[in-house]
Length: 320
Ligand code: 8YV
Image (cartoon, rainbow, N blue to C red; front, top):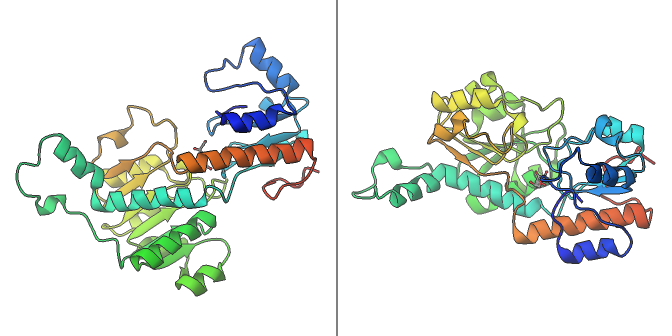
């Protein structure tokens, strides 16, 4: 186990398996760590910063299943998993609504400058009326553009269209007639979404094609009044280019839950900017959602190792 898993879920695993906790504090060079990997039939919950690649899998000769406590699996090398015959399962669905809640929270708080204004009161600076320099921007009735149209994007479209009367655009490899019919969403080319949207929300998986999809040139296409929200992976955006765009007011503001390097280094220039709202990769971090994710990951592992059944969350069915 590479993550904290609730006691009742550990107990389910312990009925069949011998469990070893290997967390961020574990020394990867220690004998105990190496021994645990050498004996592992399954691993649960490797963190985003840990790459499960050929080198890692060379240390796990018995491994048959990996169960990540996340929807994203960009830290797993699918070719290496295939080579070593390791099934990979993830936890989509259970985190969809909770993650959409957080992303919409970031959008609203960035637009209305909630944290900045709260900090102003805490700093004892609310001594006279609030002036236009502190005003936010409207959310309702604006145009929102999604980069990606998976489950989380759809949960966001519902919030934006039904709750805030927003006009919905999206950029995605394939068309999604459900959101087009139900919420009048329009599928456009990337540049058109960037040019037309008041809010751009990045919510697509990190792949070779989406790495640095948002460059300095792409940021320059956005309206100077627009807000960029990233709830996907930091590497989808060239963070240096984004920092410069925020410094030079190429766009109005950004709300970021994910970063190119996590935790965000303390010397990051983003920390000096007022027009960026930061959250520490907490899209799925609620009591209810994290419990559901851990349970789903345990269900996946039991299905793979104990029942030898494919699960609907099996992401690499090419591994037989
Ligand atoms: C992480 C996430 O799982 O699901 C994902 O892809 O990014 C998050 O929900 C969470 O930060 C735990 O690593």
